[in-house]
Image (cartoon, rainbow, N blue to C red; front, side, top):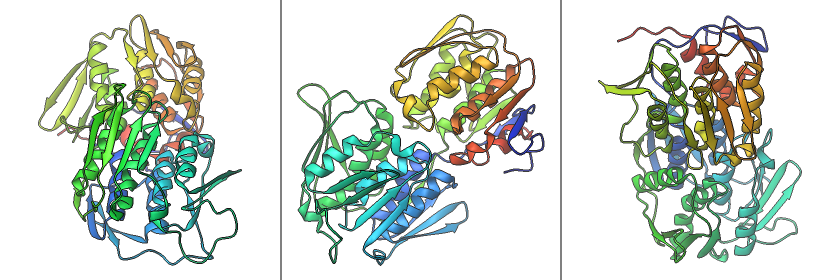
Length: 449
């Protein structure tokens, strides 16, 4: 934690300093996960530039060390990834600790099937309570072992229920040619499958991933396909007869070692862009205006609320004289709900955040967390099954809690900018999960350049 953390006790932070100047958000966590996995699936050496660690990314790094024998060496502001052979097994069983990272769990479960060794996945917090039924159905149907036990998931490229036999089960024994899954639970299932299928395809097996329902969070799948392309693998997209998405991965493709630069993260930048709209004198640097990141939609939400967004000399600034209520559909960009909820607290009229039911299955029940904690500050919030309605009003100070959730902590920090009293936040350290330097950036008064 940074030296800026002076106004706190051990467990409570008094939020009384706000961002000013130029802030550069961290590299995209979403892109970093994908680039690390593609590099670990390639034979040779890759360089991931503009990489910054976090608890979630550290879980993926360690998981790839276990599953792929990948070595990660820091280099300048990046990380060098070398794959020189699979690791030696310990008693025939590998253990991957995913922490609280949903991306790590859902991306690495398919990777664990690539060599047929038995792997135990463990996690913290609510991670293993989050949906995994889709993978269970797909993998058992393909001929793999998939067992959910309290606190862990066991997976292996065979249905064998007995003790681990000598040596791995061959990849060829798994049938992953035709895969059907819904598109409205989590795009991470689709991305996880797409990342691993080219390696199965090296045996000449083409694979088809067909969606049974419309795809939500499409931007995240587009990111996956784009990163795979940068590492030499092509995914073709088409439509099914019902209009849903179909992805085709041709066999015989291989990941190639690559030099890949990670963009700045729009999901983290969103908190500072909202802060600017709430009169914080802050400018955000290094955002890519042509980015495929779905969370770039924060700019559209700000404009719809009446804010002005300006791009100049590689920096993005936001200003507003008056903010008006908006309707925000969260189906494609669920991570934007916390900063958008903070914004809506100060919009005239009643705003509606809809299509947000999946947020109940995140690190916390984010809909309940936002409703409960914003109300403590005086906000007028109505919570429904998959939505929030927020009527803009003046907010007071108060004692609030992050519910152990990094995005709730950051949303409450931004909300404090326009509160008329002191805001005291419990659980402020939860930002380490995705943005370890958040408080340094949020509280540090940077020199405007």
